Length: 603
Image 1 (cartoon, one colour):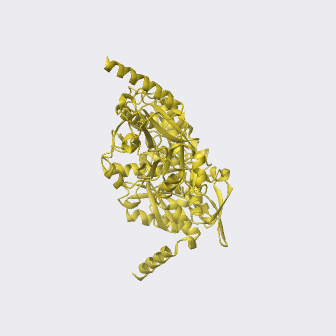
Image 2 (cartoon, rainbow, N blue to C red):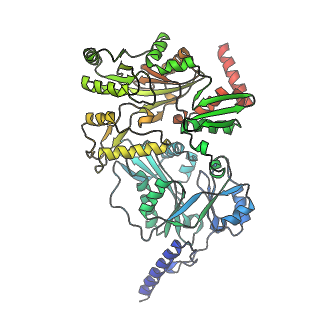
Image 3 (cartoon, helix red, strand yellow):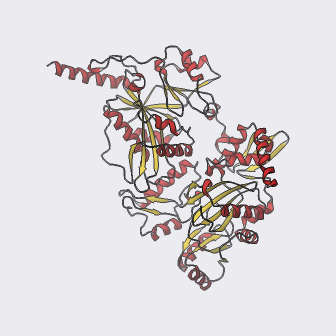
């Protein structure tokens, strides 16, 4: 009978706790079952990217402010569960700010797991330093603070921190990650809560539902450990994330987060700047770097990506990475692909065979027969518009030519070089970054149609690039899907993947993979030779290569306005500002660079 009374009392307490959680009230210290817990005072947990400062464990707001002042360099501390943020801010209004985020809670007593399992990937614990490096890669791609890989590894047995990763079943690549905090193990939390942090999905992952699967896995992990709830903090305007949390049963609770005013958090406390907010990522990365150096940046036309930079008596007007330092002649050479080809060929750069599309069907058919497959592209154009790759019959060629004519009256045919698309960023005639660009592809889950998978991938690419990268719903996408043996409404089998475009351009959904440290010297020399032939100080040189570590290549085109934001962590924006404002480079760096240049000349 005593056992029955205990169970009944336990049940009553659980329901009462649940109501108190929903109302944002603090439950009593004595928990169901007779166990009593006293929270650690002034509790702090190091998470690698910064520290979680548990605000409810601080009685004196001055001590909480002092803890935030101990924030490390390039770290983001978060004071969470702050009871009276207005009081806390009054103690250091110039140093701290109220984070514009909402707190959401999932009641683990009522949470029900999804019987459907992930398809094409699985969720597991982080298990190696390589996992840690991959997690940092995802953090970097999402603009998050990175964690030293050694921290992950040294905390692999930390009972307060839990790391899960999503692994692609086919490639073994890490495509998502989430971190959990067990509050009782962190600071003897009397509420026995938990929290979710650092949910991030690789923007180039093709499988749907990765973020939801990670959230569910963490919820099930804490549910199995009898935690009462799982909390998270989400930016107030992150509508897609909030929609996911609503779907899973999370609800708002009145808890707040406070952070320090630092460079990482600057955008959150300086107020809105409509002109800046409307810049695309390619202009924003340059403006951010300029402002970091104290260079004045004036946005002159945000939708077009135009801004003016000023330091001392020097002023330069830019459109993204195109500046006044690029001449009209160089720009016009890049604008006409046939002129570009002749210019770089004269400098010894290898180019594919090319012909004009206005030669008649018989000549086009003969050109296809000679080369097996061809590329159709407008003589003028950008961002991959109107380009079709892998055309191997006259009918598809005529369709592709008609599509290309919508971009340019003149259309070119080129021999197709089977390989991968390599973009090399050359600034001031030096290689700054090199990356393979791959066409977008989808991976089947056995449930979704090809069209649904494409739409999902397109949304993810758009979200990751500020709307710059989307997969067009056009005849070229339909052709690629058809060539793979499917139609748009077919259900793609689990684990099977198909390319939905042949071009690797980022604006049409392509993905980018850094290879700066392994590119062959011959490819670097070809890119620099092409840039010098055009006499362009900032350019993106596109080559088709068998392998970035091998010397085989053919030149495709030169871009006068390459997207520098696509090549992080390489210092593309830094080198661009170095070119425009050399005096903004720290003196020690300039001295070392000058010494290197002198040494090369002496050799």
